[in-house]
Amino acid sequence: MAKGSDKVASGRRDFLKLAGVSAVTGTAAVAAGSVAAEAAAPVEGNAGYQETDHVKTYYKLAAF
Image (cartoon, rainbow, N blue to C red):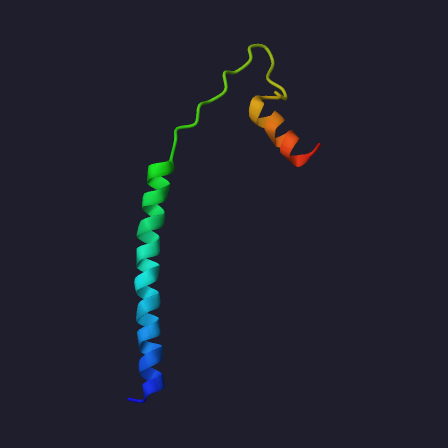
């Protein structure tokens, strides 16, 4: 084989190795960082729009 084709073949193998390691690492990071979200307590008698803390934070960050 020519030297150039060896370089390409090893580059592909290295890419596949890194892709496999990245997938495992990413999955572990997501599993370790997941936190159960707390549901907001429903307001009795008002089924319409509710401006909760996360909505206020969104408005603040979006500069509304």
